[in-house]
Length: 328
Ligand SMILES: NC(=O)c1ccc[n+]([C@@H]2O[C@H](COP(=O)([O-])OP(=O)(O)OC[C@H]3O[C@@H](n4cnc5c(N)ncnc54)[C@H](OP(=O)(O)O)[C@@H]3O)[C@@H](O)[C@H]2O)c1
Image (cartoon, rainbow, N blue to C red):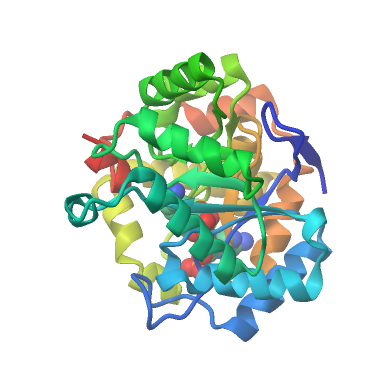
């Protein structure tokens, strides 16, 4: 396994981050295809055995059960100090604001609940899951700085935002001596490259770590066209992100397939090796141990400039989808 520095932090993370959205109680959240605990723990142990030390979850995943499963497995199979744990929180709802709950109270409550579910006394990376348009960023940053100061959080990150939003936030943090966002978890893969317009140049310039999600387009960049799975059939959230552009995307997926045959490697390896060239550590979801093997192998695959260009040249700009479509 290769390890890289997470942006401007002292955290060394594996070049692959294991996404834990697929681990959790399938009856408790938005996904019907998630793995129960006994299968999830095998995946987490397998990832640890391959040298993966970086894990991403969220309070929102399957009603908190993803955090519970991750925390339990880490306790059983790893030393807390040897792993880098990222979890995410959402800003207040309109109802919570009307009830008079402050941003500080909300963040403290969310974090304490996540720590309890994870059975941990700190997280390495605490991520704002989606830009919070209901709360002035100053209030969010001050509250986050406080939990960093208390030692419950080592670093903070942000997910699903525009480059101007993190640029503004980190300028405010700098002015106030508060903890800045050190990482961005955005939607970025070979068939969705909108992060290249503004976010990637911003992050490269400031050494903010890019840790993209849906690195394999929720399976589309790992499977041969037409290949299916329980998740491919049931994941309506991913369908909402990719169905509208499926025809244009298929041309790129076919190039991934073609190159994988030429180089005698899996499609996963091609897709992830491309992304690993661009970012710090992609977040990859897995429902089988063989999926983890593919991600690990990708860390050793070198693509030439011509191969990178061949994979890139058919991309056409996409409208924003998923969480970013509602960042208004
Ligand atoms: N911040 C956010 O808003 C946000 C949003 C989404 C996700 N995330 C994070 O990012 C992580 C990954 O996202 P994701 O699950 O959408 O995307 P992904 O990594 O693009 O896709 C994972 C899926 O790809 C398939 N796959 C992986 N390796 C494969 C292989 N070798 N062969 C065939 N299929 C393979 C599996 O599909 P099957 O299970 O169908 O076989 C797996 O479930 C999540 O777990 C979560 O931590 C964050």
